[in-house]
Image (cartoon, rainbow, N blue to C red; front, side):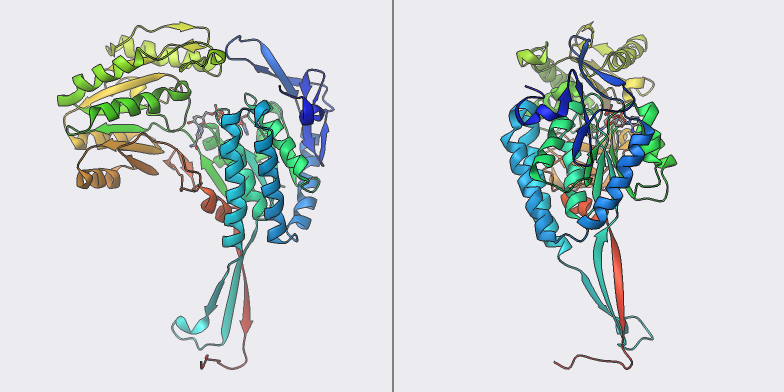
Length: 482
Ligand SMILES: NC(=O)c1ccc[n+]([C@@H]2O[C@H](COP(=O)([O-])OP(=O)(O)OC[C@H]3O[C@@H](n4cnc5c(N)ncnc54)[C@H](O)[C@@H]3O)[C@@H](O)[C@H]2O)c1
């Protein structure tokens, strides 16, 4: 149960506390933010509404703690991360087993990868550049950035938090976490695992509150040296407001699934179900548009429909496949897309049905480019199908999107698959599988409005460091003789 056992300290009354200076505290604001249960649409939990003053204090502590942490040997940093990973895995029950095991492994991998890549630097000699003798030796190494601000989204609140925390800490940074309100409770439990591991005070903090009150204040705070954000369009706005700090942005997507005539349609149908409807479609890498060759479209739609009919719809407690989407506004948005498609003549393979935040799975056939669903990210269980007459048409649709996260192509012809993959303007293309993030050490990045930079453990560690060089100047050229 949330807030019990070793997690007792993180809650008082019915409000979860925030974490700063190694302690769980109540905000001086006396206010809280409600977390609404998507099924019952009533308040399930509450978190502190932190003030700007409290954010300032958190930033101050983070700065001080980072200076000490940067002087902590790499192996010791790794040791503490391994400890946190073990504690997280040990206490998976109250957080949710499926969220935690992968995250524990991710933290351990960060520790191991960090020890390897941060233990190495570069040595350059000057005579490789024209006009120079060998009079200068350049030693360069990776050093921390300072305070990293981590902002994960609601749909993977633990995994997408530790994918920022692990790299930041192993690289010698301190970390301020601002969890998504829907998902904050899982985040706060995860933070307690880091607390129990014994990280120094102030090194990790977790502030909760209203985006309108502390969102911009955090992202524009002069104490922040790096922002790692995963979410929607908010990220585009943040990137315009943030100062001269490195940004890692993993944003929305409109992942296309291109299906050629020779594709294994059973495999495609299974991947559309998994890729389009798991998590009720609330995944950045969900299949968000199917671009299928006209000649196989009827057969594919029939296979997908047969599988949609088998999806269990209802509350998460009943282990259903399709469960209520995160908020009423999200359900309203999805409904808007469905209504627009209806008005413009899309074929509804199932009847549109909604109760509260629960939206029944829906496949829309014969979608055309003038419909909003052809371009917008529903973040719900609706998958549009656009019938195409050539591969070029499919690639053109994919590349006309303002998003460029992932895409996938289904064909038995590897040569065509490679050509299509190269032509698709997306951060990753999956061949014969639905888009997906991971394993967590794979590079993961979005082009265009889908992001800045690249995630993946190695890339994130590198991104959260800067290069420092020391040049040794010799009075006379010196060449190694053997
Ligand atoms: N590319 C990826 O890796 C990836 C992964 C998961 C989700 N997503 C995207 O995330 C979106 C869904 O998640 P969401 O609804 O939580 O996204 P969101 O953009 O609404 O919120 C993301 C985070 O930003 C915070 N936030 C909101 N306003 C803020 C502000 N002004 N300043 C600072 N922080 C602020 C939120 O509290 C939350 O923690 C979808 O668009 C999805 O595609 C992307």
